[in-house]
Image 1 (cartoon, rainbow, N blue to C red):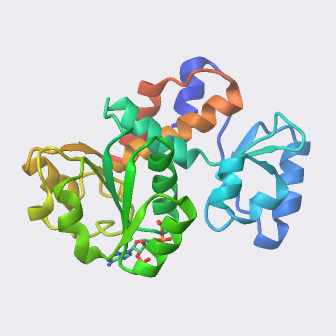
Image 2: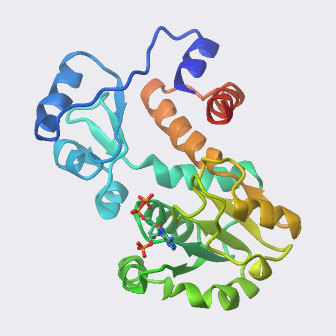
Image 3: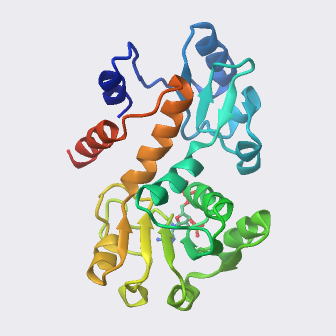
Length: 250
Ligand code: ATR
């Protein structure tokens, strides 16, 4: 999707993947800066370690994870655009978040980004997780949200307007963490899983008349946010979306 954006805007740039050894992360960042590389995306297992090598935003520091490095400053800036990806996915679909009741299932890395985004956007957030203690830890960190076990999902969803699946359930398998009977037409259901694009959860949500937002949107918009930091240009959203979806569907 990044190279589709460079092509569309006529930028002489490349997006490549690099895999340093974990113990070389500092010299990898310094080397990238020395080479004049504009920015990096950072993924597992480096999202936490990179925090110490850059100047993180308050939000990235609070979340404890950086997924985007911008070398236009010295020291380089560290951002968490996963959070922006969630916010911008809802905005793209004209789904208001402020003042809504939102339920997040999952309290791992994806759950953290979703929880921060929805709290920042002014939703009243309930976090449900298989391991309730992890939901409690995340909820305590964010102050306002409430923590629950998966058994509470049906009750929580009855009054909710937003549901986000931030677990890995549905990835590569036709399973769902939310019973279809708990879904209703007034819900917007977002799935962080993007393989497959239409998870069982989203199929069930469509069947009951809920609004759905698939996992490619979060992936797209975290990338768009990074692209805009690196290039100071507005991202060509359509071109990036088309390229991403053709890759995910292919
Ligand atoms: P990620 O960074 O993608 O969020 P993770 O940190 O491993 O990955 O978190 C995976 C999430 O999916 C967790 O919330 C996990 O629940 P636990 O905290 O109880 O492990 C959830 N998850 C994974 N498999 C699950 C399953 N079969 N049923 C319910 N939740 C599941």
